[in-house]
Image 1 (spheres, rainbow, N blue to C red):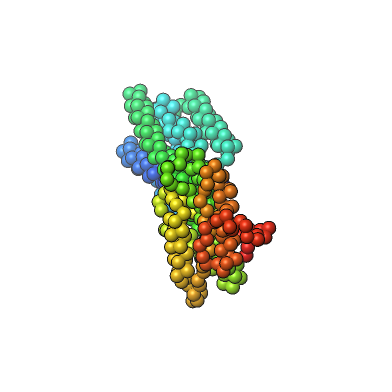
Image 2 (cartoon, helix red, strand yellow):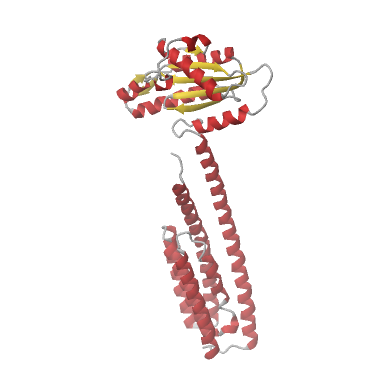
Length: 378
């Protein structure tokens, strides 16, 4: 099934959701490790309120890790951000601004712009809230004394430690997000390649569609022709295809189209092209060939289709095909040449179907109705 722009956007959003879940899982584990280290330090320092806060955060992070694993990554992300704000604010109030426990809070803002399902208004509001908390904490810490009056050398040591920790967290998050963006870029590249492929092929038969063949014909005919070689078109049509749809259903008709296109794609040379031209019609373009070679190829395909017994709902289904062939003349356009192949195909239909007919001037002198073979039912 072809991918449209909406499906592409949804797929990229899912990819970013999965990436967010992986990043968040790693961030939660990192935060859990830091809280365990804090707990050890606070126990050693006999700081029971901060030790209790660390225990609460550890339990919360275990819960958030499970939430994230179950697909609730957005709720888990918001709770992680709230925990960082609350926990670091508590540390600042207990140890003072100069210990640098507020550094980590600044890293929340850039992460707000990664989750794909957050609206821009939410991001701006959340960033503004974090800035207000940060500024409020600054004014609070400079107006009131911290709970713990630490020596100056300890304050400097904590400041350096928190500065180093903040840079370490920044480096780790940058590495994780860089890998995540690389994965998204690879996914986007893969989807672009798939879109380009689907734009070229018929979605049912997986061979070229008419648009691709038209482009290929236009490009190919602008190139200089090799002396002694000819450009040949083979236009073919499945005989009585409407009766297959009417008798066995359209799903069976789709199966027949897939089988026929597979046989034709396997039969042509590597340098030649086959496309679904429309409905049950197929066009082969031979760029460096001859009429005799095209006749042999078409006959080989005709026999392969005739002898290909397909099964559907326990029964056998067989079809035949009629082929019209024309060789491009000097200074002739592709439409004219394909039109002659179409008239040869129509002549084959009138002559009994299941045959290969090469265009000759005599065919154009035969009585022809207003419509061509592509308009003949079966």
